[in-house]
Amino acid sequence: MSFDVNNWMRELIKRLQDAFGARLLAVGLQGSFGRGEARENSDIDAVVILDVVSAADVDAYKKILARMPAGTHPACGFFGGKEELKNWSRAELFQFTHDTKTLYGSFDGILPTPTRRDALDAARTGAGTLYHALIHTWLHGDLTPAFLKELYKAAFFMLQAAHFVKTGRYLPGKKALVQELTDPAEREILRVLAGQKPLDDTLAAAEKLLACCQKVLSIS
Image: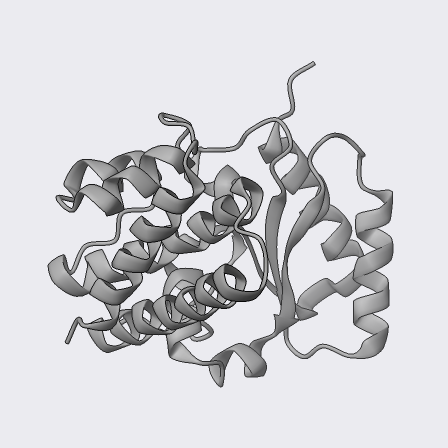
């Protein structure tokens, strides 16, 4: 039987309502399932927002997840309180806000409307983090295909934010984004992520990622 994420999320929401009642403000879905790009072992990125969150609430949510129907899709995502999100870094909330598909309640008044400044900060922060991780491992570790693919996953969000800075449009999926990118290195990174191209040459892959990070860091 194929996995139905909508049924899974409906069951999760029911159990959350039973546990938290009116304190449950919003539930959403992010990640590959939200974008329609889920694969066999993709995580279920559920977003659960309460009025406030205590240690007891974290334990209660952990028990709810442990009792949810098991399968090949592990539960993941975000669990937090309204006030924490209202004071969160807007750069970090750029992708979070755009990527959250509302399934229960409302995120109005919790998540801010992303601006170009938020997108620019998100793109530069992502580029700096990737730049450091790439060069540190290049110098002191091992540039394996598995490691580079993990960096490529993060590069998607960097390129997504950078595209918003340039165009004012948010493209949620890799296939849609790759169609609008003109830089060959950026296009290849997304083609690898979309499964359209293998990552065969690790040095070439590292060089492309380095070039992309440098380009994004220069955006103003």
